[in-house]
Image (cartoon, rainbow, N blue to C red; front, side):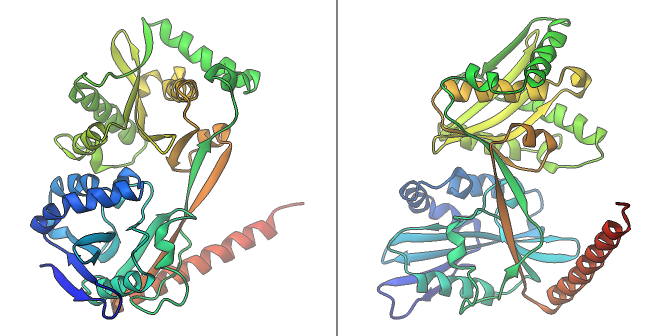
Length: 378
């Protein structure tokens, strides 16, 4: 079902809520044009959202809730949301949120504030969810226009205690070698030592996969290594499940957009570290990185990061963005850290109860942390 509503007296704007696969496909060209006009990240593109949607195994657990603003026959805003069931609750959140580092809406300059506010209200009035949880919002995200305090329409949202960080590397180094030389002697030694350890087992090569090379074997290897790493660390991610097609579909989106940069460190032709990156807005973004835990002593994952950072600087990219995640190794490399905020609100009674329970847990945790701090010896 796709709902239509007029904004009223605001020019010729009207609203639409997309919930069907057929309508999602029909708006591809307009959405793609808007993505280009906004210079938006691939995460907000029609191809990215569609690739995710097409590879969902169980559609009973997910519902599209994509809001659109039209001005006459021209698409001027996209609010890419979905409702997902987990932990006994229905969450209204970014579409493809599990694979999207930066969530946001798309908005053309001619889209009015009133239309965006009304769109949010229309999305919320459609119901079907217990909680709104909008995560990974950059400080300059366009969505803050909708989520500002005191909005007139829709579910009232508040800041959520959950946040993530994005680590970036940027500077005025003249070359990748100059960036490497800027690190402490111990750091440079560890990087070179890792390469030497690998070379004890065979021929080592760092390279960027060519545009014509088949991606399948490398992605299969990446999933194999990731599953091994996840098992060792007692973690899970369905992106790398055997037989799952989402990873290949999303990487294909990057390749067709011409922004895929897939780097590997190979040992005798077999990848022991792989990083699926994308280059947009003068920035190298590291989307998925993994390594063979059998070679952990050589730290091939870190070796790969050091290598593609140098490559990026040598190819005149202004920044390397390690994207979301607070891993300790990123602290050693980052020149800047950006905090991604989130907002939350209740859309039904069950959601209100869940928020209340979460507030109680947070207050208990804060009190315990305070008591532990006071108990520490001077």
